[in-house]
Image (cartoon, rainbow, N blue to C red; front, side):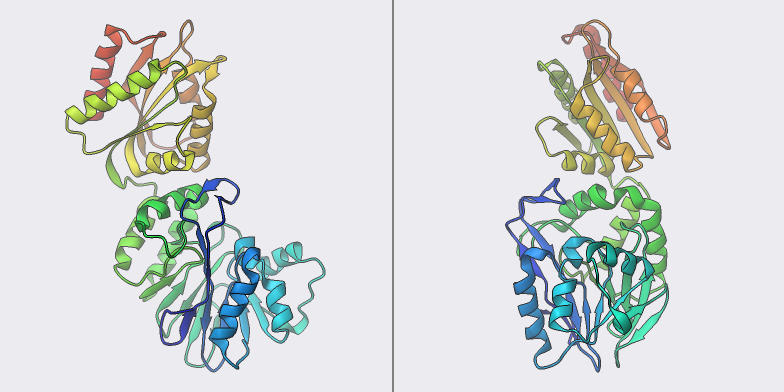
Amino acid sequence: MINVTNDILYIGVNDHDLDLFEGQYIVPNGMAYNSYVVLDEKIAVFDTVDKSFTDEWLTNLREALGSRKPDYLIVQHMEPDHSANIMSFISEFPDTVIVGNAKTFAMMSGFFEGLDLGDRKLEVKDGDTLSLGQHELTFVFAPMVHWPEVMLTYDKTDKVLFSADAFGKFGALDADEDWACEARRYYFGIVGKYGMQVQAVLKKAAALDIQIICPLHGPVLKEDLGYYLGLYNTWSSYGVESEGVFIAYTSVYGNTKKAAELLAEKLTALGCPKVAISDLAREDMAEAVEDAFRYGKLVLATTTYNADIFPFMKHFIGDLTERNYQNRTIGIIENGSWAPMAAKVIKGMFEKSKNITWLDTTVTIKSGLKSENISQLDAMAQELMK
C-alpha cells in the first residue's frame, strides 16, 4: 500500500510470474495491475486486478479501508486484468455501488453470467460528476482507448487523472527500467491503432489541471508530466519521436542480412544520428514495431518467398499497417534468385497507408551481393541522409 496523496492510496499488485502479457507480449520484468482507493466521506475504489491476485489485492484493500467499507467501485475498463475480481469484491462488500457506463455494464453481463446489481448500479455519462465529500470526480469517456467502454476519471480536488490503460507500460513497479522504452512498446503494441481516439482524449485532458496520472499499469506519474503527455501526443499523431533510420530484415542464407548490415555501416559513417537494426526472425516483434514508429525512416530488407515475401516480414508489415503506420519514408532492399517480387509485394501492402514516401533507390539483389548492389546501397544511404 502506497500513498499517492493524503487521501489516495495505491493498492495494486506486481506480477512476476507472467511470461506473455495478453498472450503475446514478452514481459521480462513482469507486469503491474494497479488499483486505487480514495478515502473521503465516501470511499471509492478504482478497478480490481487480475484473477491470479485476488487474495493479495483484497488484503491490500482491507488494510487501506481499516474498519470502513467502500461506497463505490468505479470500473474504468472491463479487460480481465482489471475487472476479474468484480465478483470477489461484490461478495466481500455486497452493499457497494458499482459505477460504470452503459457499455461497461453490457460487457459486465458478458463476463459474469447472472450478475444482477439491482439498485447497486450507478450508470454515468461522459462529463458526469460524483462527489465523495471533499473529492469531486468527473468521468471522461475514452472510447477505443483501447476498448469501447473505457473511461478515465478526474479528481478535481487532488488534480489526479485516473487514466485507465493510457500512460501505462510493461513491467512490475519494482523493476528498475526506463519508462519510455516499455511504455512505447506497450503503446504501439496495444493502443497504437487508435491514435485518433487518443488524440481526442488528450484534447479533453488539456482542459484539466492534472498534477498526477494514475494508470492501470506502470508507475504513478507525478513529475514532468509534460514529458509523458508530449510523448503520447507524438505517438498518437504518428509523429517522429527520434531522427534516425530503422532497418528491419529477414534473411534465409545471410545475403540479405549482409546488405542490411552494410547499409547500417554506411549510414553510421555518414553521421546518421541513430541507426537501429533488427532481425525479424530472431528478435522481439513488438520491439521492432516500436522502433518502426519511433524513427522517421524505415528500410525493409527481405527475400522473395513463394512469389510473396518472407513470413516474418509479412507479419511485421501487417503489424504496422494494422496500427495505421503513416508519415514515414520507406526504402526497400529485395532479394530474389530468379524473380524478385519483394518490392512489388511490400508496396502493395502499404497501398492504403497515409503519407508514405518511397525512396527513389530500391536495392535488388539476385542471390548474393554484387558491385552494382554496393553502388545501390551507397545511393540509398545518401538518399536516407537527405
